[in-house]
Figure 1 (cartoon, helix red, strand yellow):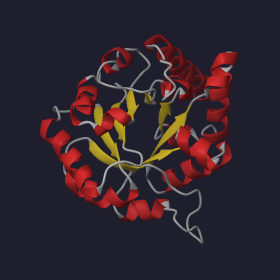
Figure 2 (spheres, rainbow, N blue to C red):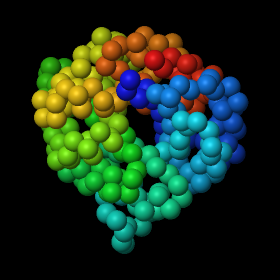
Figure 3 (cartoon, rainbow, N blue to C red):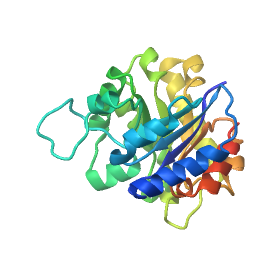
Length: 253
């Protein structure tokens, strides 16, 4: 069975002490995870070391960075390289979150470089893709996401692509008041898998975990995760509330 993943993205929230409390509250009540289940906490850069120490030795629970730079090193004030992440024991990293694309103009080509650097450093990229409202309203979301995959991932060989986790974010359903149905989530996840299969074959396509990132919360996680091609979620706001995120974890297949 493909890995089923509940990934928390704290974004720019919580102080150090608040983050420690939240992490401990969740870990105190977290259910026993099956071999195919994982929980990730993507915390702000200053908290990575502390968070990694807190989860050390816990089965299938890992800490992830929210971003990395697309160069190995250099005069890039305020940026963090994959080697820095590796040096503190962080082995997962979100790449291409919709907010990074929108606010920091990250291109598909830049994200291809980030994916390459992550893989070269044995860091698992959690690659985000997804369409804005204007694209969804045009009905061209499938092609839009396919271009993102082609330009950022499909230069990889099959062995490397198997190491990537994909997260589909319907940007139009995040903070807009609009809601994506579980059927719409399944439709896009199936499309992503079909696009991968067309280049790499069905076996590999069926091995890649594809997470859903459209306002997952306690009230909708079970229904969304029940869809055959949805392998868990990349969770924003709900991951900042212990009981909410625990419910998301319990909804994993």
